[in-house]
Each structure stands twice: as structure tokens, then as C-alpha cells.
Length: 431
Ligand SMILES: CC(C)(COP(=O)(O)OP(=O)(O)OC[C@H]1O[C@@H](n2cnc3c(N)ncnc32)[C@H](O)[C@@H]1OP(=O)(O)O)[C@@H](O)C(=O)NCCC(=O)NCCS
Image 1: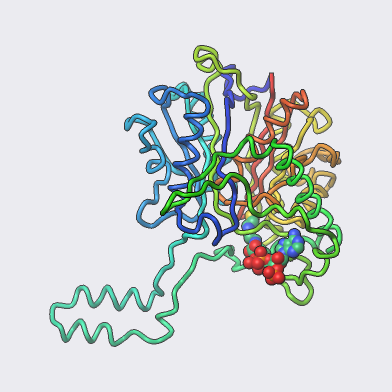
Image 2: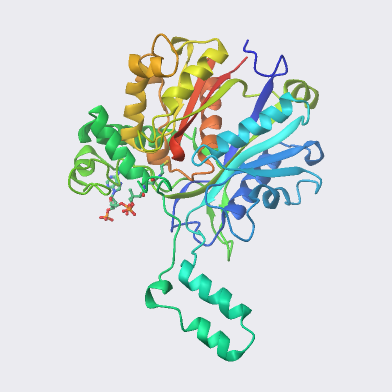
């Protein structure tokens, strides 16, 4: 057993998510808070969680509402939970749900909480659109002016270019490089071909479609009745393409580096709306309340590198630390869930796992090893299923543990790359 928890194990009791919908489609009338509330309410109802037992709710989101930045608190204010529940929001880019889960788990380990809900939500259909600095300055000056003339003078400073709205960018603030450009750059550095990326994307859709058709993925989904009429419920993801094929994928044009790039709309994860959450308990509390946990957190680790280097490669540094903390090696891991931001990033991460240079860079004598593809993302991943930034980590944890149980496996590894050059890894055990 690992030392995480000092003998106080954190049980993952259950997990659930909303369907994941491409941004601008099914959930365009909703917010991340709405999606988070639906998800947590269903988690509580489906798994018969006594609301009074919940001590803590931690949620992640990457593009928060300016009016309600603490999404965790807004989600916790559903009728199913007492108003005294502690609730805080965390941000670690695409690993925000992972951060929410480890924050909540740490609170359980410390004995500050016994039952916690952790996860995240994102609604990219509904992001804050900001005014430019010039427009904002003029508005502020006008509001402070004492006379009508003064107000008019302040507003007269507005130039046509100031009226262009500012939208959140998926770009590194330090380098200006978008995620897609980083993935393209990583593909070039590591010699990942366009065809390899398209094949991986196809695999993601095929496996996600299989998991949807046989009900394994849909079993983890809470139906969402869509406002304002609430006449129809969304019950499954809308980005998984049953009919995609290599020919279609190969024909798509690169979107980020249009001339020399290999990353396309087909081999990238799409912009997505959705929420996901897991129920965590101390092992003792789970026993007292009569729950049979899906599994336990055995270890976790985070890592980071220079965002100007290989932005999405930090899981390669985080995974060996999590494995070492778990006292396990890759060959003991039955299933691996690796976040698919881009097929190029997954293939680079897998290469990194095999690389002596990356091992030494992380302070290890030998690499993590070669991942058996039959154990990797066995029900597809974010390319097909979608990637609501703040929610993905919780979606992956639930799928990993449910599938580990179905296969009778003992250990799982979960990795996520994130903006800022960060990476997250977690090792799960079933018994
Ligand atoms: C890549 C990206 C720019 C594409 O956006 P988009 O152009 O709106 O994507 P679309 O869904 O409209 O797809 C574009 C085209 O490719 C086609 N396409 C996409 N995936 C396909 C597939 N698997 N098979 C066949 N065709 C596909 C679409 O049908 C569409 O065709 P059309 O133009 O004829 O309608 C956007 O999804 C993106 O920014 N993704 C990356 C997000 C990111 O950076 N995340 C952070 C990761 S941590």
C-alpha cells in the first residue's frame, strides 16, 4: 500500500457526468453552473447520498463566470445539500477536475471531511465576452465624470477598434502559442505523422462508439433536460462519430499551422460543454454508510515544465512520480486513461513514457515503459467523447474505475496534460 493517506484511504464511491455536447449545440442555453448542478443532483439521487453527510464540494472550471466565479458554491446550493456544505473552486486548466479530486481527497486524509463531492464543469457555449481596454477605460471615465459634458468627452475617446469584443483564448499567456499550435510543434519535434494521429483519432471514435452502443459509457451519464422549455432530455454525447473513417480524417485540412501542420478538427478534441463529478469518502465512512467503493486513490502527482517547450508533455514527468509513490510499475497497471487533448499529444506522451532522456530529466534511472495499447483508453477518450475543460478529469476517473471493475483489474493510471505546461497523474486501486 502507498503512503498516501497515512493509512486513511480515500474511496471513490461513485461517479457521474452529463452528456458531453459540442459547444454551441445542445447546451447552448445553459451555463457551467447549470450543468454542474444537474450532475451533482443526479449523483446524490442516483447513489442515495444523504445530503447531510456531505462535508465538502470542490469543483473546477477553466473559464469561470465573471458574476459567479466560485462555481463550487453555486453548485452546492442545490436543494439536495445543506447550506453549510463547504465549497471552493480550483483551477489547473484541463486538469482542474483532477485538482478538485485531490483537494477533496486531501481534506479526507486530514480528517477535515468524511464525505466530499469533487468534479468540474465547463460551458464553452457561454463564455464571458469582454470589452477592450480602451472601451472599458472610456466607460469608467464617463461614470466618474461629474457633468454631461465630461461624460460626453470621455465617451468621445472610444475608437472603432475599441468596440471589438475580447473573447477568452485557448492560448498561453506567456508565449501566445495556442494549444493546437503546441500540439503541432510537439508532433514535429517527436516525429509523429499525420497518419498516426488520424489513426489514433479513428480509434477514439470507434471505441467510444462501442462503449456508447453497449451502454457502458451511457450508464455514467445523467440526463439533462434542456431549458428554457425542458421538453427534451439529452442522454448521450453528440461528438462521437460512428461513421468516421480514415479517408475522411486524412482529407481534413490542418487548422492551426495551415501550411506545415498535421493537427486537424478530426484529430483534436472539440470545444465541449459538460460536467462530471465523483463521490469521495473516507474508507471508514463508506463502510458505515454501506457503500461498496469503486476503488481507492493510491497516489497522485503533478508536474510542470516550461510552457514554451513542449506544452503538453508534463504527464511524462508526473506519471513516474505517481507510480513511484504507489510503489507500482507500469506492467502492474491494468488500465490507463490518458486525456486526449490531441492525438499528437497522446502519441508524444506515449513516446515520452518510453524515453530514457525524459526518465533522467524526471530524476529516474529508467523510463516508465511501453504502454500496451490494449489497456489504453479502452472506451475512447476526449477526441471522440469531448473535453469540457473543467470536467474531463472526473469523467475519466469514473470510466477508469467502472471498467477496471468490469475487467476484474487491480490498478489503474490516469494522466491529464494541461495548459501552462502542467501534467497530472493518479494511481487507483480497486481493493
Ligand atoms: C480544432 C478546432 C479548431 C475545430 O473546430 P471547428 O472547425 O469548429 O470544428 P468542426 O467540428 O466544425 O469540424 C470542422 C470540419 O471537420 C469535420 N470533422 C471533424 N471531425 C471529423 C471526423 N472525425 N471525421 C470526419 N470529419 C470530421 C467536420 O464535419 C467539419 O466539416 P464541415 O466543415 O464540412 O462541416 C476546435 O475543435 C478546437 O479548437 N479544438 C481544440 C481545443 C483545444 O485546444 N483544447 C485544449 C486541449 S487541452
